[in-house]
Image (cartoon, rainbow over all chains, first blue to last red):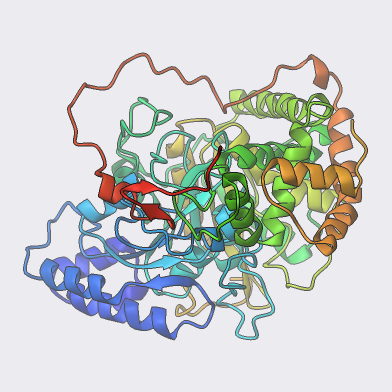
Amino acid sequence: MNYLDKTIVEIHEALLSKKVSVLELTKEALKRAHENSDNAFELILDESAIKKATELDKLPVPKDNYFFGIPYVAKDSFSTKGIETTGSSNILNGYIPLFDATVIKYLNDANAVLIAKATLDELAMGGTGTTGHKGITYNPYDASHEHMVGGSSCGSAVSVAAGVVPFSLGSDTGDSVRKPANNVGLVGMKPTWGLISRYGLFPFAPSLDHVGYFTKSVEDSALALNLLSKRDDNDATNTYHKRDDYFKEVSKDIKGKKIAVIKEISTSIKDPVLAKKFDESIEFLKGKGAVVDMVSMDATLLSTIYPAYFIISCAEATSNNANLDGIKFGPNYGGNTYQEVMYNSRTRGFSPLIKRRFVIGSYSLMSDNQHDLFLRAQKARHMIVDAFNEVFKKYDAIYLLAAPKTAPKFNEASDKLSDTYLLADNYLAFGNFGGFPSMTLPLGFKDGMPFGVNITSKPFDEKDVFDIGLALEDFTNLKGLDINMKHGEDK
Amino acid sequence: MRAVNKEVLKDAANRLLFDMSDEEYNTLLDEFHIIKEQFELIGKIKGVDDSTPMTFPFEVTIDCLREDIPEKPLSKEDALKNAGSVKDGQIKLPKVL
């Protein structure tokens, strides 16, 4: 066990007591990044990281700045000034942003040390970790490389799960932080829509896009939200809603909290190991004084979360990526007209998968189809959000297994019309539809692979999410989990 | 709703200024069988057409303006840094006329 395998709070204490230096932490993080064989990195920033770490070691460690000297990784869809940022897409090869994303600025101002940019599904449009221009990103729990890490924040998830860093930035449009968190045993947080500035994050579908992040503990997750959620004038959708001191206020006292388990989603999960562990966790929560009820929702409505998400996200993506034209930035392959320059750049720059998604978006926006597809999906979204808001009128949080199974294998087929697929495997997008704060954390292991639970609450009620998560860590004993921490089956 | 065939999908791609290979169109046509069945589920929601479209997760009201702070704009040199084709301080494109 190295200090790098500890949580942010623990590393901060070690830095304060001079048990470790920023340079030692940074060198170890860089070493691990280079040794990692999961294809998690677009770029490893040896020189700038070592330089910053050396400078930081000349300064006193501020007691109240937990991110001082903490090595971190950012998904390569966050703009980083002077550092190539591609979104794991060939269409942005060589693109060097002229500014930092707001969250990068916050982390850099706090003197966290950016050690690498992480791989993602191309332009964040995917959930498998297989579509980036550098190829497949693998799950660090599986040396045979048969299991997915999931996506789109695949490299960010690997960075923390493999013990390279204790914190990484991702983004979540459907479940792109919370699903990989399930697959690699991490705390993956997506707070309320608009709470964290998205300035400098490559947009995919702005009505659904959230900045999210990975940590190894709930306490660290609350700590990170304190830093990242500061109000930003550069993002017009960044809320003026009051921010709390999430770290100071997080408490494992959940007595009297009302928790709903959605029956239709829960019962569509057939894996007995996952179901048993989940049931045990419910008994634990009850034992801590929470009221946990099985709540029924309209199954037809729930089964449309994924199709509605798919239509809305693909349609929004078509316009949000219209600026990728090979003219202002990205490779320019020439042409006889300006349209031909764009056509050549986009034909060669986008991979087959996201082209197909763009075509689906374009098809659903055609005047003949708009009513039956795009507008109807937006209407379904409204009904879905209303239905969940009804649940939140009576309950503080919704609690469910984050996925129906551990990380799937690459060659695994699934019935895309089944309840397991439409309900259990893809329900997390309801959190993006309604902008609800939503967090996945590890619950247990099956066959050496981790699986997790998800807690979602109403907008701006991050406290209930963190409190329930913190209480659950006493049940799971998986606080601080990474691949270097020993774990047993079905702990 | 417009029928799905290769020509329609090619039109959808060309509207976005890119093209795909025949193999990619065939893959998408295969995928559309499932996608259409998934899409049709939405039409089965009781009362869906009486609902109103939701464009953002919740009401967002920004009723104040930023402080009017003078800032230096991006320099021409910086603005052109990422462009692949530049001439005489401007982005160069093929002639329109």
